[in-house]
Length: 214
Length: 291
Image 1 (cartoon, rainbow over the protein chains, first blue to last red):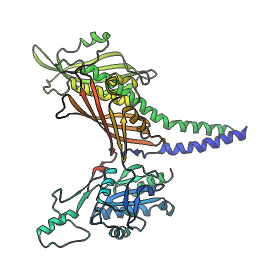
Image 2 (image 1 turned 45 degrees about the vertical axis):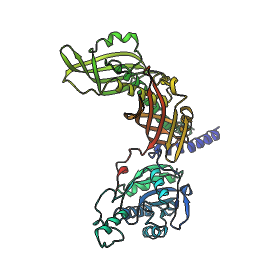
Image 3 (image 1 turned 180 degrees about the horizontal axis):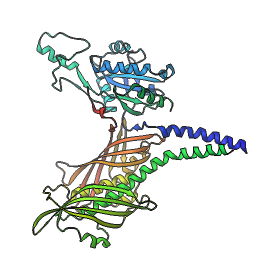
Image 4 (image 1 turned 30 degrees about the horizontal axis):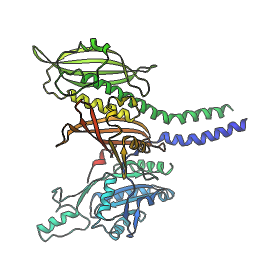
């Protein structure tokens, strides 16, 4: 009798432990944010987002010619990734999707991303592919020239000297404003949280760990 | 032995904790939405204007109570509401403060009326008004703008009944004129890269994979006239949904619905199509920030 009760207790404990995790859950699926997509990796190979199923993903949008926010974001992601154990890093992917596929070729993206961490994944693709990914995550990007924002004095990764105003105007097209959100995506590809570089790294790590352990 | 039993009891308690949260949400939203729909009918039908907007008649037994309201009401602006469950019963208390505008021989006037409705509400049934009492009446400064008219209440009556229906309150079908359109209208849902399309019944069945159990709450409502189509409008709704998906994971959705409808000669609404898209939920103030 005691043995049976002990077995029952063990089964109950086992089953309730999964419910306790669920009860602690503060990361709801954000319905309609994200989904499967096709892109090109930094080796120029076609890749499906489903390829990362089973990994926890942190996804960010940006472009390599951004001199301020994107390097700052990647620096933040470097600290975030560095805060995970080697085992947790294996179960996590940091993905940077360029919103400027014309300039950010796979090779270009590879050297830029590699500067922060060799494990980071850079994704580019056709303009249609990028626009689809942006729409899936309900993100946004705009060329600053379209927004009529003067850009001559904005810092950029590859500074250029302009011979005349017309040239400068043309180059405005290579500067963008874009969504700064960091999307935390679970092992099933479902977006579970929206973070940004203001999120304390320790807090973000706990959320990643929670999704790894689901 | 006692220890083993304690462990079992502890676990049983923990297991039931999560579904109870979802059940609470379902109970709260279905009761709020179906009661709100009845309240919209109550106030809309009190306004006496020449608009071609009809409301179902309220029960005869409330005629005397309704005669105490000022006559010739031009608008009713609900300024505050509060829904609470009456402990140990199927009853809900719905308190409403409203600013009522009306005309009489001496001109235009406004009154603040504070009332309490007691509803009896059995699960997934239509709410029944058990009692109504006026708590306070105060004369107020005259309000001249006419925004909260019969059409305002008709749209809200429909919207609350519709989202209650989405949560399984079948009894709201009469309020949404379901017999006129429910099996004819098209319903499309876009959730990320997934698109569901079909009739209301087939789309709702597939939608359940994503939003299995939970509740809808109305966040905003707008009505747009469709140019070139007579008596045809778009009811634009933003609705928040919380609950669990088919696998039991908690889900949060910000739902945008565009309901195209035509007002028929008998003033009934005939829904032509429903287009739904799940937007970025408002969980992070930086979600909309661009750098």
